[in-house]
Length: 241
Image 1 (cartoon, rainbow, N blue to C red):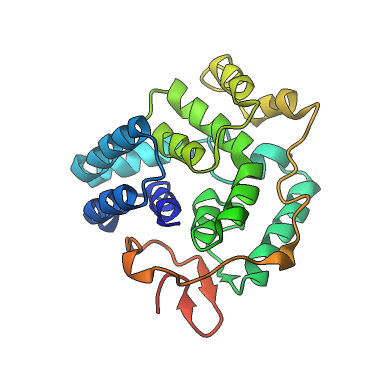
Image 2 (spheres, helix red, strand yellow):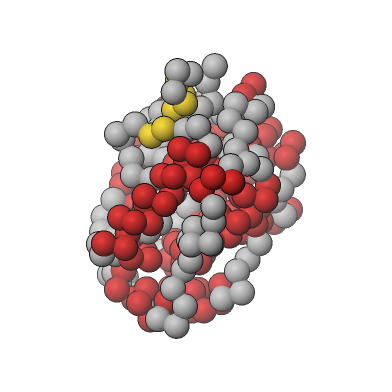
């Protein structure tokens, strides 16, 4: 599912290779056709911003959004468990999914980093994508809503993820919370949302079920030379021969 690879790249720290890959990204999104016409149009406009904005400005914008506090952290379990011990166990469970599919992580990122998670899912069967990404959609919707409240175009990749697996039933509640948080609200606000039903991200999944088909469609994968997070033993990066 190459659309997930595109979204993964868009949520990485921007560099010159990302800007050069914009035409390939547009082609992949059109060919897969997973997005609604409206979201496709908005994502195309966002790609235009990526392509035309001076790189230093892009990088400053990215850092100001994602590296200034916890509110927009791209580490999924931080929005569910904070710094509790439960986060560590959840990452162990997620690591088992990666390992069962034949992938290993290097030391650059934690398993719950959203771009890394999407890169893994890009090689998986549709059923596993719907299950695992579906479990994480509460956090995805919240992050997208917070970005939209800030007027950031980075909300569009999160809307695109909703097109892939669907909008969760409680999406309106997450958006309502995001709208009422204020500029400096932190992760503690999430406690109110998850008080009745905490996310069961991977809770009912069998790490040995697999479904991942690494290397499929490698010729069409977007190469933006990001950090090589996922590697297969003896074969190098998952999207490289």
